[in-house]
Structures are given as structure tokens and as C-alpha cells.
Image 1: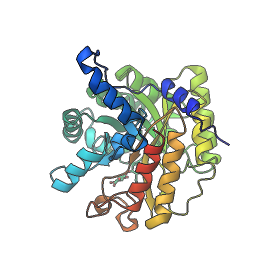
Image 2 (image 1 turned 45 degrees about the horizontal axis):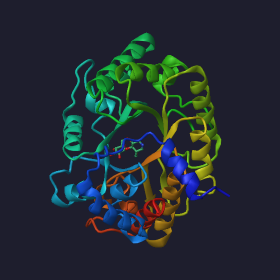
Image 3 (image 1 turned 180 degrees about the vertical axis):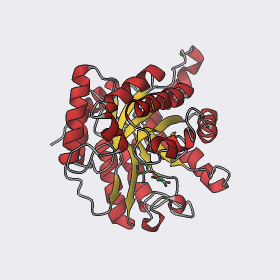
Image 4 (image 1 turned 30 degrees about the vertical axis):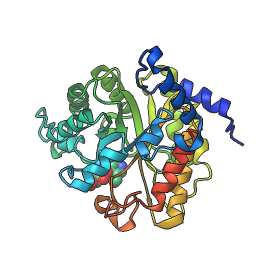
Amino acid sequence: MPDRSSRSRTAQRASRHTPRRARPALTAAATGALAAAAVLAFSPTAQAADTLGGAAAQHGRYFGAAVAPHLGETDYESTLNREFSSVVAENAMKWDATEPSRGQFNFSGGDQLVAYAQQHGKFVRGHALVWHAQQPGWVQGLTGDNLRQAMRNHIAGVAGHYKGKIDSWDVVNEAFEWDGSRRQSNLQQQLGNGWIEDAFRAAKAADPKAKLCYNDYGTDGINAKSDAIYRMVKDFRARGVPLDCVGFQSHLASNSDLSTYRQNLQRFADLGVHVQITELDVGGSGAAQANVYRQVTQACVAIARCNGITVWGVTDKYSWRAQETPLPFNSSYQKKEAYGAVLAALNSAAS
Ligand code: 9MR
């Protein structure tokens, strides 16, 4: 059984590397208020936060959402403002959006989101520097060194532009097949196995402080695909390739088998990398859906190096799987049972 003692949780908190609020020096005048606050702090009910971002922050984690261009919609923006402490562009920072012609960068969508995040004190995840999908047309026909140069230049341009503003970058997205082999993308076929580490090195040079992640789906347990990624991460760590985190997309269903979900996250964390749930959504409704959300949240909060969860959208209304109503807010921005399950799991990790 996992060790759930408070001692272990304290140790876990201490070993996380997420930013904390600065503590102001105490004055004598503050003593009374402090005593009152201390009483509140030790009362279990007073600890419960009432937003996802607030509840995650109690143990140094973020709770984020993927954002599409709907910030002008009042309910969309107010839900995002209130509940989420991190944002990621659902599409605006991908290769097709940011470099539609070779060497001509367009940062308009990404810049808007970063400005929004800075105004509202939210973390930003960057997604995704190199991916076989959503490549602009001009990339698709490149061969050999020409493609290698284009990839390096793209990473330098985009990660360089956002240098210092991104908490974690998905440097490489979805490079493996279900059976654990490398996906036969243009990158793989033209550049061979070395392209992934090449991409991480280029990202490190462009933004040395961002956490650099490998991100994939279908890695929701111990399986051939997660085994292959595990071997790659282990090898990168051993050889000093700059990889800091692994993103588990977690596009799930209400009947997904999560029996080895946590164990899988833990084995990656044990390699010394951060793990993050990066694109969580769960098709379904009611208790079955809520139960999957609860298990995923509990798995993350049980692992010291799991430093945040992102859901893939703010509301069912704009989800890429809208028909499956996969998010914690319904299409009218009402909280669903899944919302309550996540909030409770985040809060109980703080008590
Ligand atoms: O949600 C994104 C959708 O709006 C785009 O049309 C699609 C294009 O491929 O990408 C979706 O986001 C994907 C993400 O970038 C990577 N993991 C899978 C996500 C869902 O397809």
C-alpha cells in the first residue's frame, strides 16, 4: 500500500520545487492576527479551498486548463479566472500557428494568452514545440538536414520568444506508437532516432529555466508505450539530455483501467523527473466520470514530483470531444460531479 502518512506528505511537499509566495517578516502588531489565523489553519474546514487552483496551491501544485480563443465570453473568462492557476494554449503555440512560413513567426495568439496569464498571476505551459501533427505545409516536404535545421530554428524561435515566461514546455509530443516503437513521422524517417534529444537540447539552449517535457497519450498505466518512454527518459537522464518532466495527457473514458496509473507516474518520478497530467478529460457523466477524475487527482497528489494537473478545456461547450461531455464544467459553466470529486481530492491532500 502507498504510504499516506502525514510525515510522508510533509517530506513530499518539502521536496517539490514549485514556487511559493514570499513570506513577509512578522511584526509584533501581527501577532494577534497570526494567532487567529493559526486557529483557523488547524481547523480542517477552514483549510478547504473552494476553487481548483486554490486547492492545488495548498500543496504547491497548479491546476490548469487549455485555453481556446473565447476569452471575450464572460462566463468562459470568469470561470478561467476563478478556478484555474495555469493555462496552456489549446492550439495557438503549435508549429502551424507560430511559423506558418519558414522563418516568419506569428506569436499573436500565444502572446495574448501569456499577457492574460501575467495579468492574472497564472502559470503558463507551452504546447507543443515539435509534433508530427499540425505542422505547416512547408515543413511536411522537407528532408534530411533541411528538416533538422528547420526544427532547430523553430524551437529557437518559439522557445526563445517566450524565454522566462513558460513554466513547462512540451518539447516533443506523441513520438511513440502503442507498441512502443517510434512513430514513423517525417521527423523519425528523415532524422532518425536522435531527433528527440536534439529537440530537447535546442529547447534547453533557447529557454534554460523552463521545465522541458516529453508529452504523450495512452500512457495511463504500465504498458508497451509507457515502457518505451520510460526507457527513453531513463537513458536521457543517464546521458544528461535535458529532459525535466513527462506529461501524461490522460484523455480518458469513464471505464478506463487505472489500476496501474499511479504506479506508472511513480516510476517516472523515481527517475528524478517531474510528472504532470497535461490534457485530462474523461468522457461520460455523473459518478462514473467523477470517479475517474478522483483517481487521477489522487494519483497526482500522492506523488511529490507530480506538480500539476491541466484539463483539456474550460467547459464541455468547447471541448474537442464536446459530445462526450468530458470536462468538470458543463456547457453552461455549471460545476459537475467531477468538479466536486477533484476539489475534494485536492483539499484532502492538504489536510
Ligand atoms: O484540442 C485540439 C484541437 O482543437 C485540435 O483541432 C487538434 C488538432 O490535432 O489538437 C487538439 O489537441 C491535441 C493536443 O494538441 C495533443 N494531444 C491530443 C489533443 C486532442 O486531440
